Image 1 (cartoon, rainbow, N blue to C red):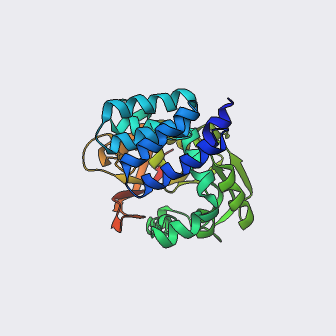
Image 2: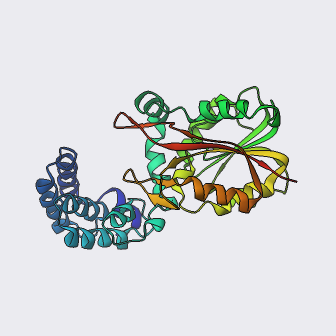
Length: 309
């Protein structure tokens, strides 16, 4: 069975139909039925990774962690790049280092599926206001922040909401994102000078030294546990006096944790050390919420950093 088939279909129409029943049961929180139906699917199509993943998640919800971990490991063996996101489930069950829970393949698959409804759901459903908050932070950085930027790099640009918020404040803007389908949406806006598909740190490492005036990372660093390379590469590509503006999810402890929402949350102490180590001076650092989760504000930080000489 091909790798792509194991992710999207079992290759057996009856098994696929039963899998859809299992998904519906899981969505209705009928985890007993979901686990049973997923097992029925696997009796017909043992190599169907998505059914193993669904079975594992249902068993986890039923507080049967040993069986859940076994099922999730089988899913991961069949789909090792983890487009299905089972590493997150394994981390929650204590069977995987949380710092290794999110893969590029998972983020790409997540947003490829999300792209057509992304803007409407994010802004209307979750009250997302990251780009507007970044714009406000740049303005409040005062005389130390210019009113217009020659070259902007938008990390994790998604559908282009950041470019829309920055209209009139840049000469050129380039975006990078893992999701090709998100980039298709961004391209429709016609605001970007160039768009690139790939990982943001790889893209930054390919840029010339001191070639950018502003690097923005709105609601993307939440998918990265380690940010040292992002900060170091941003410093390298920024001109003297150039700015890095970002948002992250926050927690009150130390270091970085994997939150219950499957995103990383960073502490203020860790972020301060990262900035100092990278040679970036803080112009603004504040608590902020740029989205809601279950109608509650998600704690976060917003920062504007400047490259020293």
